Length: 278
Length: 300
Image (cartoon, rainbow over all chains, first blue to last red; front, side, top):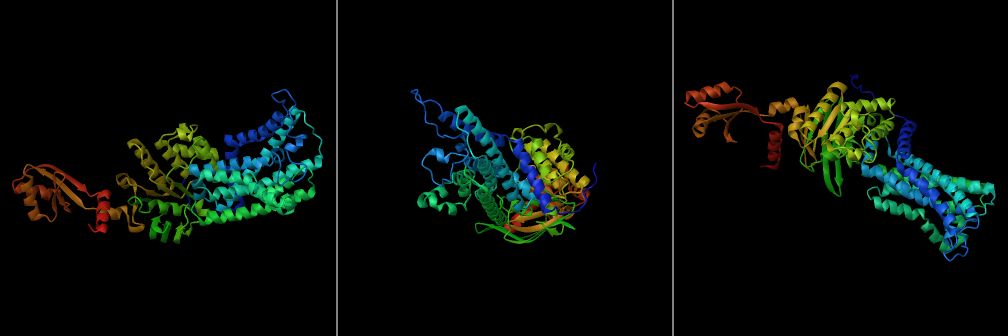
């Protein structure tokens, strides 16, 4: 039999608390099928788009491929805040839609199962919860960006697409989108905290923001000329990370992602601290 | 030192007070039976102590520290409403997540230890959703026990359990208090079960604590009575009423209240020609005491 509990109370530091919270989230991420399903979806979608649009039409005529260049599955050649066909819209930014749904399910299960009670009964603070969820989900979305890239390459090879590109710009675009994942993950975490009692609404809201529709609507009103203004939003910066990216793109994405991450984490922490957990 | 000290705690939902300036004191090492009717505020109090709800006003201290202090919180375990486990994950995985959350060093050893306490060593690989209600309750207790908590908050932990499940749960709770020095707060409607293990009681009504007392105090306040059966119940009743202050006919017996010396009752009846065919000495239980108290508060 173990000795009786001693009444010693040592406060864990912020980093110690965050480490344990991240430990839980990453353990859950790697030990449940959700993450792997979304990785496969992220790889499958671009491969499917590139592969199927290059197939012959049913009447035997040659189909017009959606992308002339395989890397357009990753990003457009220039920032397009509005689009005229689906090919200009459907690129790696779709990862942020998949990510939104994944985050909603990931966080929604915390509340549906009641596990969040276990977290907040112990030493976890609301701030730790927001930061940890944002980091974990950003990691998941970054991984989706990589599988999306692999899917695009596979689809491009299958379709015999052109692969010519400025490699530096391509890498900056991909890295910028991965950086943007943190901002997006923070937005979704915030939305899911707001709608924590309504699982369906949290998924719908994440989907809505993930599609970028609010920003696309502004873009349609003001045209692509509003581009530099739209870059202050998550969707704007994500679009800005295109195949003509340079170091400025990377810096802008870094700043915008960090800024929104901070805003959403502060707002989410305040909301959780001032309202009942469930 | 007290494990829990609550002063003037209030909480309302949509303008309706669930707790109205509640005061509560739970001594260290106690098994505190938290009693009250449905909607009286038991679960709300527990959720507030666990940090799930935000109080409107009032103060909560755990082990003389602010209840939000992470140093204290890390030593609190709870089972409120359900175990808070992921249904599609195994029992082991659920416990592992909580062990990681608590930043325990020997996680696997600690999980085996708590599974042994709740007698579920062989069920670690089962998915949580496949467990029976009794097993789920015990897993909830195991979750709460991880990391050697100094305070356990349990909401209806014996609800829905069969007789054997209740016995096991009772033994577990007594074991962790006696052998691990844990303070336990249990909210339950099953007063008979609570009476077997509680060292202290708190009775709450309409969001207010109406009485807090130790098991010894309760014992002192619970009246003793002697139940008697004779051939001529009415005649014996009249004879007894002439000598003893409180004699009632209840549940087919003559009950003589507040007389400790049963021999004197039997002798007195014999002297008056009544042979006692059955005699039993009883005490008013927690349930009767609670009902009487509630009726007194309602002015019945």
